[in-house]
Image (tube, rainbow, N blue to C red):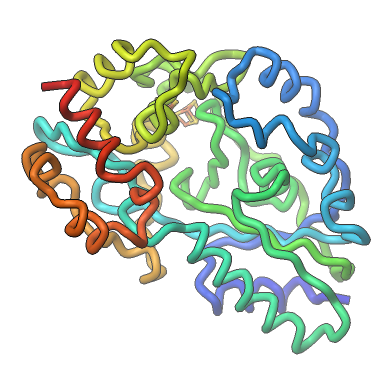
Amino acid sequence: MLITREIKEAAAAVGFDACGVCRALEVDGERTFFEDWLGRGFNAGLDYLERNIDKRFDPALLVPGARSVIVCGVVYKNSTSLGYGGECCTKVASYARTTDYHVTIKQMLRELAERLRLSSSGARFRAFTDTAPLLEKSLAREAGLGFIGRNKLLVSPRYGSFILLGELVTDADADKYDVPYDGVGCGDCRRCIEACPMRALTPQGLDARRCLARVTIEPHPELVPSLVQDAVARSGWIFGCDVCQSVCPYNAKSPEYSNPRFAPLFDPSAMSADDWRQMTDEDFDTLFASTPMSRSGLARIRQLLSETE
Ligand code: SF4
Ligand code: SF4
């Protein structure tokens, strides 16, 4: 039996800002919406989203014997999260300014599991962060961390939406489970929908074929290249996009990161388009190898910038 108070203390000790615990129950309410979303092609060719759909809605199919899910969140808001000043035309999403969160959060979850094993011998844990078919945001809501906003992200009333999630799925029961978030959500606000430069937030869900967070990183065959070029030229985003978060009122007063593992490694606002164009592959590797920017690489950034000259 896990003691929820001890779980939360341990999560804070390894650097998570938020932690909630829910039962590993089937989350079936959103399945129809998800399948409709896939049917529209809104997953933008991300085939892995079409696989293991049953597991996605039932943690016990993903981890046999699963009884509880420990959902953890860590704030990554930084100096550019609420927007870039002036005429910056080389904007980079906030999350990409730090070490790749898949690596950092996995490490933090391992550290958390180690601590919990000390007090709950025999319990097994599996760590996930954005890499497995697990409904992270729905589980976060079940664990009381916040609600899913119209920007399709988890919004914490306290920490806003610049929060990254990671989960430990365990076969142990907890002595106490959090209640699902039941507070105020978006209300009448539609700022993210109205501010999206690509009109990617639709009533049927996020159309990833249009979303800059997807198309700046990897071209998609269904997206007209001129649409991307135009959006990059207009918006200045060369890797990801923060717009539907920076306009969110919940982020206006939310705190910036306090965990030093999420300290930015570079400042895109101090770099010009020419800095990116003239950068060598060696310099790029030295500066960005540990960041998510290594996923698309320098060639993709150069391509976006050359198309907008
Ligand atoms: S990340 Fe940018 S392009 Fe994508 S939905 Fe949000 S505002 Fe729109
Ligand atoms: S900007 Fe408004 S509508 Fe969008 S997620 Fe935030 S509160 Fe909800």
